[in-house]
Image (cartoon, rainbow, N blue to C red; front, top):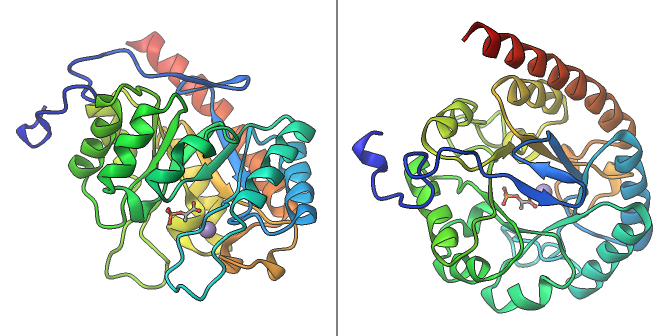
Length: 282
Ligand code: PEP
Ligand code: MN
């Protein structure tokens, strides 16, 4: 391994060759392809339940939805907090989808764990070391998003913080990084997927919604992520995107998500046969 990545005692593939797998509900992340889908933010019971029903019907494995939103402006919708967590719990009970939601503050980790299956650390908090240590002490899997200005080394060191506190259940999430390009919201760094495979045993998923910020780009980038070997996707879906209180321009409607799932699952199947045939050659 390059010296730039030395000192990764727990996340390095040099110290653990077998891939990390994480059981959540009836899926094993790192082994089964996983799709997490749902609204950017939980906005109301009707919005969440209708969206959850739609993503479940299309084949998603987990429900995402922000209860606490990290917004650029303090005057923008900040999320419904506890009310949102209760709605997520209800959606989970009704549709059997495990919940992934973002935790913004280290003081909230313990009680939020009672409502969720996966704790999400957002891009803006990737290097919030107090928060990383706190989720490292919890027994819930952590979805660690890549900071928008972060290198692979910085990102893996953040995962290292979580593992070193005793929680080995970390899933990395590439969500695009800031470059000089402005047509897309961020620039999806697809080469990080096979790079991650070279240096760490942790699973990695892709968020094409925040990476592109554009509806038309979500399907091509999802398919490209599958082709690059991602372990899954996290996609924003809203039952009526035109009414969304945050990230209106990038949330798929149920029909668009259904269409995405068909192609993603077809490509995923094909990739598996490709993997088998390369195994045979090797
Ligand atoms: C999100 O997934 O809700 C989110 C805010 O994404 P990010 O932290 O990647 O910007
Ligand atoms: Mn969003």
